[in-house]
Image (cartoon, rainbow, N blue to C red; front, top):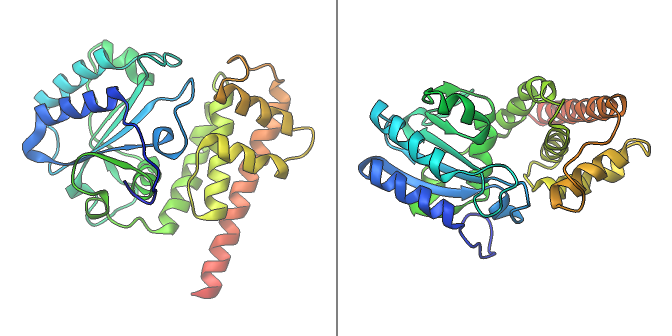
Length: 270
């Protein structure tokens, strides 16, 4: 376990994923790690299981096909607590030593990809700023499932690269607000927390941290997002589009201002 003393029950699905990875690429495996909600707080009704795999080389086409087939069978729909959705990220260790921005993801499985994966598309390598945040988060808070301790497997991620990743990820995240209001608002809250504190937290903690900082007329939207996330309210977005966009813009501006302040502070101390 990394940077945490609490015991974490590793979900059975995570162990099953680890078994599949070990079967398919045991000779090239550096480590398999559980991170995200399962480690930092607890799995909520709509939480997926986040798993990071570090390999010593890129996955072959044959392994990609078989891994995708097996994950499609093992992963469930959002909201299914008996068969949770999986998010499995595979990184080629050679692609992150030395660390380059944006980092390369060798393979990604997520339930949002299911339609195209079921149609026959196989995940290939790509560069993504978000992977910076993923690696930084996993290095700070993760649980070892198989392999070596993560501190020797993932390099130190510079703080300025995390800030850059958050800033460049904002437009794409915000573009998905319609139909995914809860997740986008909570992710923006967590981004604001991260750029302000240089730390990472659960989405529910981020929402609680953000609430006192919001205008009174916008706070109920964050409260609704939080209550949906923790299972206190039905997963139905009942707030107006106008208010939702106002909150998104407030959060975006707050994030950008916090990044700007950090940059000026770092520059003045440099």
